[in-house]
Every structure is written in C-alpha cells, then in structure tokens.
Length: 232
Image 1 (cartoon, helix red, strand yellow):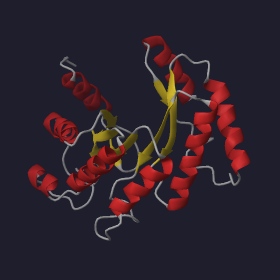
Image 2: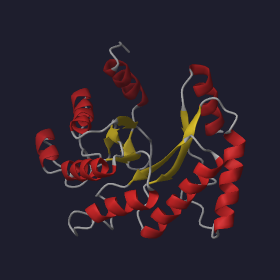
Image 3: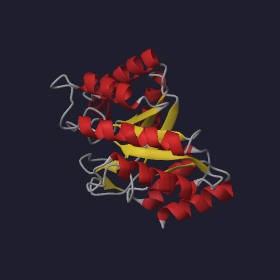
Image 4: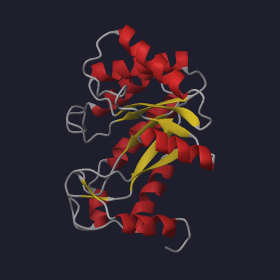
C-alpha cells in the first residue's frame, strides 16, 4: 500500500504528508452520484487517517477541468473542512495546455477565475512543463520563448494577488517524451526561479513515471543530490 508506506516514512522523518487516495476521492470515482455518498467517503477517510502525526491534509483533486468537476472538487473540499478541520485541502489547477480552456480560444483566464471562486482554496497549485509541451524546439532558449508558461504564471499571479491566495508551482524535473534532450540542472532550476519571479510561495517537483515521461532513476538520484549540493 503506497499510502501506508508514505505514512511510515513521513512519521519516521517528521515530515507532513498530503494524502491522495484515488480509490476513494479525486475524480476517478464515476459511480459516486450523491452528496450523501461524498460526505460518507470523506468522513470515513478523515476518521481513518486522523491519528497519523504526519497528516498535513488531503490532495483533493488533480486538475479538475470541466465545470462539473470543479464544482465536485469544491464539495469534497467543504466536506474535508467539516470532518478534518485545520488541515490543508489541496486542489491542482490545470494549465493552459488542456483541451477546453486555452489561450488560443481565450478561455483560460476565465477558467482560473472560476476555479478559485468556486473552490476558494487556501492555497492553489498548478504546473507548467515547458520542455515537451506544445510546439517542440531543439534550442532551449527558443523552446522557452514560444512557451505559454509566462502567460499562465502571469494570470495566476494576478488572480491570486487579488484574492490574497498563495500559489504553489510544480516544476519539471524529467524529460517528457516529445522533448529530444535530457533536462539539465540549469534547465530545471530555471523553472524554479521563473516561478519565484512571478510570486510562487511553494515549489513542487514533478518526477512521476508514465506513458508521457522518460525516467532514468539513477540520473534522477544523481541530479537530486547535485541540486542539494551533494555528490552522488
């Protein structure tokens, strides 16, 4: 059980854990239809984990996009506040390279506003992975020049400042399959500094495996150590 392993490690190291349990909440439960079902599940989850000293909150939903999904994420958030008060409930906003709300159709800024006003999160997180998303260029500088990351960061900064909500940023640490080169440490750290420049208050690293990612575990370990001033 991945959650149990994470709890064990975090308890041992004194870390806080934001729990994501896709088997019970987070948008993958198509059979859930009623508010009563949602509330029952949230109550059960809250009771199950409330005794864990590492518990910092719950990862409510990863990138709800459609309006009904955003509304459902808001319901989850409200129920978790009811049954697990004082913890962080985190919902992740989808960036502009989704299929519905983009810069090309002019709908992305309105999506950001609806997300924030509907869920009313204490913290909002989002990602942008400029290397391998959108038009791909071999030249790193050109790849960044044509990226919509700057627009996404700008609208997030504007809307979050207006609502006094801090935003966190997922930065890219692995090569997405469409990008022809491995990411270097300067490429990775540049993403960090771009986010900080636009006012990000928290940083999260994206290093998940999957069909759209290429991961060399030894390379990732060495890169992590190097970025922390150690030798691998």
